[in-house]
View (cartoon, rainbow, N blue to C red):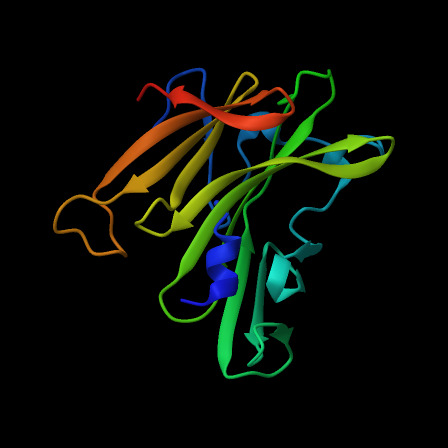
Length: 198
């Protein structure tokens, strides 16, 4: 695994009040989150599946239809040519008022691969403030079986994350267990607020 990937490691049926979205594998957004784009100051007006994302030390990549393939140079930068190949995938957004200010926020799940078997997931939450896009916070994921995020859902203002949990004998690719976590906006940041019911 590459150092840049490790630093990035940042994306089952639910209960009736929880609507799960796909996680970093494409597909339609949940029906409750579909609709016409909002005004230009609304996070719904952003084309989340066709835009540029900053991947930290690696640099920036532009996804098309939620996916980008790229090369990685010897100095761990996104490049047109390089020995290693990488990819970045972004799921359709979920929309909800996570920070309780009355405006919708966007919950974006993603998976970064930097060659080899590493697939690093995370969830980022964005909002609009003074007509500018602002990142509210990050819910860290993991590398596939080791804490990787399976699914993301909204339950009111909470973000429900289902993540992989390795059991004895599991390979890193194929966790047999999972747990659900409840993340909320509290005191200016996203914090884990305990396990979510199955």
